[in-house]
Image (cartoon, rainbow, N blue to C red; front, side, top):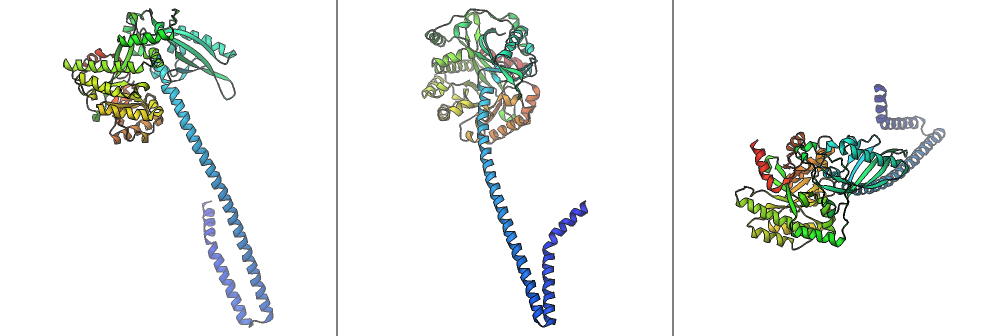
Length: 512
């Protein structure tokens, strides 16, 4: 087979030489005959006929070659048109894919609605970030787990009962009330949406849970059982009890006044979560993310998902942001005055859209810093990737104003393709937070690992520090250290604790 293929190649390469040799032999033969026949009439006619036949043959070959070239040119033109059309379709598909990914990121990482996919065997599959955060779960406590393991026996029975109604309905909707282990109370609007395969067969359902808790829905709710203090972080699960407490529905004016009074009286409590240095380049100074809870009766803590919507609805988020900033600055000044060495630490504060647009916010921050004899480096204002995409001009102006005051800036949720690398060039950023959805898949998905590596390399070139979110396990920490990530944050590092207790916790860990 190899010899035959070699022979064909040699024959194809030798064709031009064979044609040239044939032409030379024919010419020699004609010259020989002309010389010895002395151009008599018969040989002249014969040779003229041969030349005419040869000319006709060459003309035919020429026309055939032109026809082949024309046909191939036409085919090439058609292929070029087809390629251009396919390239246009590919570009359109890429643009649509970017838009779809933005929508998926909105659902997966930003949307406050809790989403979980459950099959007919009641095994949980896909879930979004809000589902983990609201139920205080880790990734491994949901994926591949039965409803009973995720929600508890009683709630699982309630969900199974609702699922049976899906067989005769397009969707099922209901409301339920839930008490969490930390004493926080939720009122949830739940929707079950059926999932079908390509053949139209029911294969599972999506659960969509939205927090519809109002301020006074939690008034008078008892604190969770004291045994909660005995549970380890891995054992924290939603309470199985379905409460039947009646709710007092307030008017919008009453709800607005309730929020205003809470801000004026400082009925909030600040928590913090450690952001620990990991790489040598990060140094040894830890930073902290500031979280806020609303203090209700009997020391109950209302999570931000229950009161942020109210504050946003009534335009009170700027007031709340200023309350947080002022109390963090005053607390830091007090700690430094009493000998706590946190001069190089920054406290990360999430900022609302309304505050980003407020031009006088930087003046307020500068005044509070001066009153407490602090520099702006103690504050790091955190802007989400979604805020950057939706309000680029306002975000850039906000960053510039805060940098003039001396504050640091962080961009959170980076890596979900809402923000491209090129868009960060020139931004006054000190930190980028690698989105938790990437970190959770770091050891399982090569694409997630490639994303984290690319972000670290880009940030290193730009002199920006990287922070990995949602860090839960030691093997993930080891992997991040190998990549050169500067800081880590998550339940594997520390759980949020009251601000005044954070440093006592750190000192305890250091002693061990």
